[in-house]
Length: 200
Image (cartoon, rainbow, N blue to C red; front, side):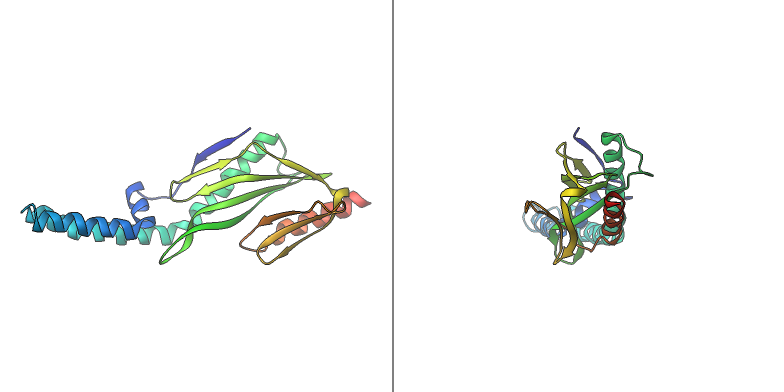
């Protein structure tokens, strides 16, 4: 079952949006404020926009820089909970992990506007993988696709992380690759333990 939800960013939405869209917000404030001052003869309104626009942009960029990591963590936690609910599993017995790959960067901000997410459930006899998942920090939303793939451990030759990709190499040569910005050590260790248990 597909699922979706809202990411808690801990700040006022227009401020958050202005932070992500800061080049456009700044340009709009300069154009609009300048138009009121120079062409429309509304000096006070134009001055307010020329001062308020950059102030909003600065507040927005600060909010994004401070809150992007927590927003992504919130999205991942919600996605894992949604996965547990959709598969009806006990997370204490069947661990669920997320790996993320950034997309859509913004000048001056280290985080990305959106992340492709892969959810891996490490079951007793197989991995269950959701790869149609996204966390969108700009729109403060996440989506969990309905499609899953189950890969039994007896089909898996090995799992590793090389050059930003988690590789699941299968005995039949039908390998899988999932992008990841960081090496998912806990996931790799968990898969290794499950494979060892399954082979005993």
